[in-house]
Length: 301
Image (cartoon, rainbow, N blue to C red):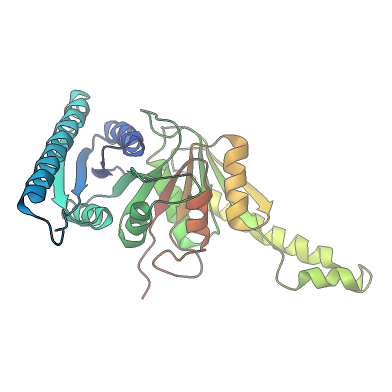
């Protein structure tokens, strides 16, 4: 599945430049075009401003817009110098709305953006623009984090709950990775609710280990099925089953093993079309030490 159009959010900040570098690498890999999107804020009127103040504000605003245009032009020239077809969209409005509208207008398969803009603080806080884009987009969203890189991803990690959404995440992760790299797949499993109480009864009265063995056997069966279904993906797969809460298992594995990408489905078995605060996907994005690819599944009815 090749990418044909990639929308990139460009607010001229450091994080958006990191996103642009990665997007250009993916465009080179797929021979895709890039749509560079710059959202401009509305200059809100100020009450009780005299003519002199309005004139000064107008001059400042004009100077800022001129500088933004110059910097945007520099980035456009740099991308085109690498032989990538590029278009620029500069519109007034909320950045997440402008990005999503552009992705629909240009039939993009992927939106690439930084985790924060000029107001970002730490990796534990997902910027409001990124969060809004993830919730509203109908295509995949790649939130870039970490050091700048002008290559496709080299050490991907895909979270799976064996749902159709996570299966789609695995397939779509392959197209943002370097050809032939191994894709690590991780499944976080937990004992059924109430199993802890079995330890109070004792092994003789309730062999709780049989519950654990059954859960693991089911997970291994699902893992074997996943490997068979994605055998022709073009990337070797390695599946790991880890006990624990999903979001913490995923982010810990990414940090421990030095992954540069986590791919998650926007919804799993809950069938929720949009991300909800506290969901596995959004928690992973907020705490991930690396970039995150959010793959939207089919719309639920």
